[in-house]
Image 1 (tube, rainbow, N blue to C red):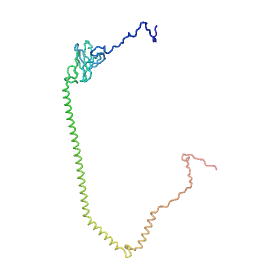
Image 2 (image 1 turned 60 degrees about the vertical axis):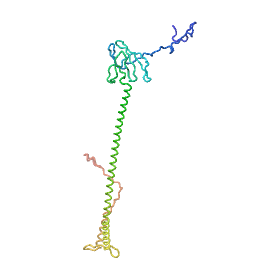
Image 3 (image 1 turned 120 degrees about the vertical axis):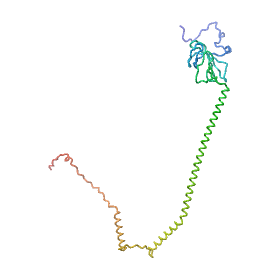
Image 4 (image 1 turned 90 degrees about the vertical axis):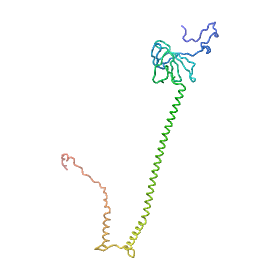
Length: 286
């Protein structure tokens, strides 16, 4: 039995390494034409086979042949796929549509109707409902509608700003009018006070003169104040009564004498609890 891991190999005596050829062919030897490769994919849309009427739902898996075509859309390559019907093995082909961001069925099947697709999309779909001119016209209409909406929004914003400015002006005018009324009322009160001032000054002057005359009338030549003598008594008795009343008031207002605290220990008499419980103690013999 030979070794599992061969460390040395046998070369026959007539071995010529120059006769060995490369397994991979150069790129120049590849046949011209579209490049085809086998891929695994899912049906991009639901379809009906035109040969046997079999319905193929979207998402069903197939082993397909992928072919790169010579067609391009703005330097985007377009691919074609070949699949076979699951019932009659009829060939079905569809290709990519970069313009409509979808797929377009070519032959062997008919794409089912889909509500969300455009009404003029055609039988196989693929976004062929409008040409470049129609698309440009549609974009221009959308731009015009958008500009009209922007103008309307700008008008609404301007109207709101004007209303806010008008409200602010009305508020300022109201405040100014209120301030003017307050100033006018204050000026009127000041004028009235100025008109009343002479009479008030005259009245005060007369009262002060009367008080001065009364004070001079009740004063002696030496400047002492004359006291009024009550009926049935003289001034000396009144002064004594006032002094007695003053002494009584002072005595009432004086605080009571404070007692000096004593710190002598007081022995409390113990309570006889046995008498309360009905226990009689025997008298002491001594």
